Image (tube, rainbow, N blue to C red):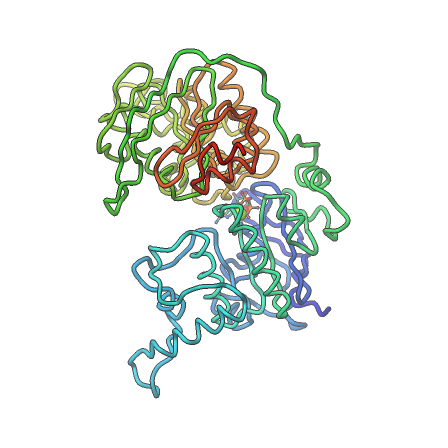
Length: 509
Ligand SMILES: Nc1ncnc2c1ncn2[C@@H]1O[C@H](COP(=O)(O)OP(=O)(O)OP(=O)(O)O)[C@@H](O)[C@H]1O
Ligand SMILES: [Mg+2]
């Protein structure tokens, strides 16, 4: 097969970091090539260089046998390169077709008027060709995250992409959507497209790819054929040590009730009932997981518990205090830690430094603040300690949060919330975007909370994570808890049936 992309000796230096250190990478026509590596290894940077978002410090790029300077995404698109970023960039009130043609509108006889009919037909044609099953007339804010991602893929194809870059496309997808994406990618390569995929999920790496390039600290460790490797070897290549992919949990009896949720009703941003009469308890020394397909009320539930969304009716009590109508600040003071699902929107202030982000929520307290003055000495020291303990990959505590890699941003939030040692930790998708080594670490810390008689509410789409960590699993479907089961009795199949709205009895049979 001909080589469509060759990146040779790529070096990219940011202040204080060599993000790419003489990387060689190639892509063959019709292959799916996974770029695998720890958080901060330099994967996104390398792909941003290929897509023209960054210029390499040195090195060269050869596309279809010709050397090119890719000065901007416009150049990349002309060369047939398309990129789907992790944070989608669609215009919510527009239809799918409108989003796809944005900036590339076909016009009637050269006039200014948009020829929507032609556009819809074109979009439909590409969708059918690759089995994307997209309806061009749906409005973006009505469609699922998985569908939005297909729209992003379609958008790249509409612009003539022959080479597709996908940066962690499955982090936000359900298991079924992940399978479907796998099929779509296979269809694309059958038609001669070539794909570079970044993902941390080893299962997918093994099932979807032809070759894998492993990077660590900016350098290529190895490029191998997928058929010659397995999950354990990949994990070890990535982080340079053996990783335990499952966690052990001790037997433990739960103590007093820490979080009590009683008949809770919450509306979503469109005023529809998103949480319907939900009741449950989380006890000291217990991990309760909420499992479910994304968009079944988990987000609104967590927002209500943490004071970010108004409670319609029902009650919440934490350590015996009625917090139903408390502000976020007051809830924090009650001894609550919160790892939010959307790290960029809720968890961090991207323009602030890492050290500042690590004291958010307790920045007015001693020793970080005294007599109304910030104590920067203490703030820096605190940042340094947490960076070390949580293995945040960064040149120092003084860089802005926005310059960190995705997984390292997540680690900053995790460090801050664990540092509070909260009586109740509400962790929503805590390991999203983390590499296997960091997942192992976070799982260990979550179990330590339980060991220390703290209560943990874990909201996660990852069934392996839910079954490995929780004591009890409550399944949420269309805003209701359809059943709660002991984790020891849980199987993927049982949970799957319940997550699709089936009752516990059906799941049992
Ligand atoms: N715009 C930037 N300014 C400064 N440093 C940056 C910038 N972008 C990335 N870096 C640094 O370059 C290194 C590589 O980051 P990159 O985002 O490529 O990692 P990654 O492999 O994609 O990690 P993750 O799995 O966490 O997404 C990190 O140390 C990061 O802090
Ligand atoms: Mg990245």
